[in-house]
Length: 204
Image (cartoon, rainbow, N blue to C red):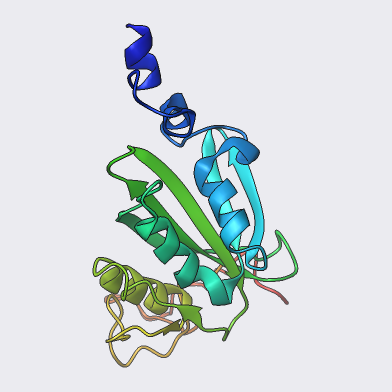
């Protein structure tokens, strides 16, 4: 492979060539274009950036999440213009506060780079919806609402997606959710209910 192929061509600037360092970009946050740009544009919203196994994760404050993602999408030098996934993580017993993380997985089609953006929140805190930025966030956020109980502020149709409309037994992907639910269930053909199996994360 020639030097021009490695650097992107003789006309490329050093800022453009830095993208050619891996599927997730540079491995050091201080050299990653997206991290540097967000730190400059959103100094109050920036929390930290971590590289783990060559995957870059940017953490920002929850109220600014949509604004930061919009900047990453629209900034010409970054162009993270594809939402590949949106989900959540229950950090119960891994840290005290905040309990949950919302995880936004972005991909830059022009630069062929990925970036993970996270924000922490507690139960009941509204999370800015990504639907105004990416239509594909609609069902992803409905799933997170159904499974984790996350309220996405600005979602046009936030309702259950997987569980029945009359479900009243909590949110199954929370780590303190009992493995067989909160209610006793008698399997067809049996007289006694299935034994209760508590989650090992459930608080006494």
